[in-house]
Image (tube, rainbow, N blue to C red; front, top):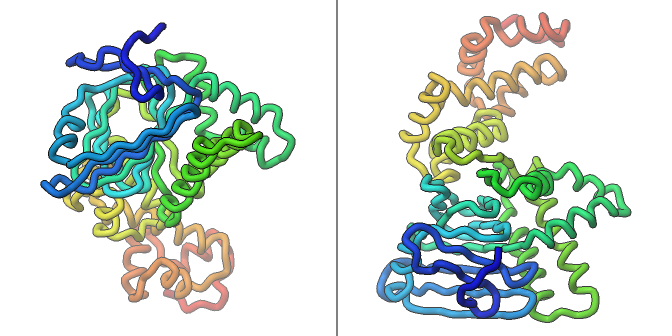
Length: 356
């Protein structure tokens, strides 16, 4: 398809800008980075955008009252390229094919080509976008196939690379990749910011070898996001209920913390009220949030009893139980046995512990 619209600073070409249904963006370079920053919705707040590509750099700032409403009322758009959105600060509502998904700081998604979507600021937020062309994805795939080192060859199984490869084979697929930070990944924003800053530096002041360096930086970004210890990745088929994705995020966080993540901590991580998160879990499992978390907690306790020689007291302490009697009670409710009975059955040795 040819794109005959108007150029946005020679970085994007926009088609059907004033459509009430969907605008269409064409990428005019292999790679572009956009930083959008909204400091708030008050009269003294500002909205700023900075765009950098292989050909141009553009910066614009205006009072929020002038740009914010217009930005948030834009119709959805599609593009002929892949787009990664990463939330650096605050939260954003991503409207994807008429369904809304909330993205808090540290979370990320990769939007396939030809999917209608729009970002909606809720309040103060800072977003990073990476637009990359089909040709760039093909070049990165080739680089992975021709890699010299084992660490690079491992990228062949990377979930981000796999998602992009599948989407290249079928550009009509209505899926996107959701990426949510693991609970113990406290450095996501700093790590991603550093990678984007390095890319922007190469785009703005390219020297010999800049193309190869940019290829490497994008692959490092994909490697970071595709590391299961750092990010949980989920392919989301459009038409799927929004609550399904929220439930998946709850499950990942409870898995990360062996079920010992408080309701208030979940509220902070997901930016939803505890009552709402509880209702999501009840609808999906029939269990309340506490009981669902205890399932992960007691499963991990069973694993430690069967596979290690740690004492029951040590296991209870690791799972943040200050009251051992309470741990025994919950364990018995979950398994029908005491910890000692469970260990004797599945390990064969109680290591001299008292018969509780």
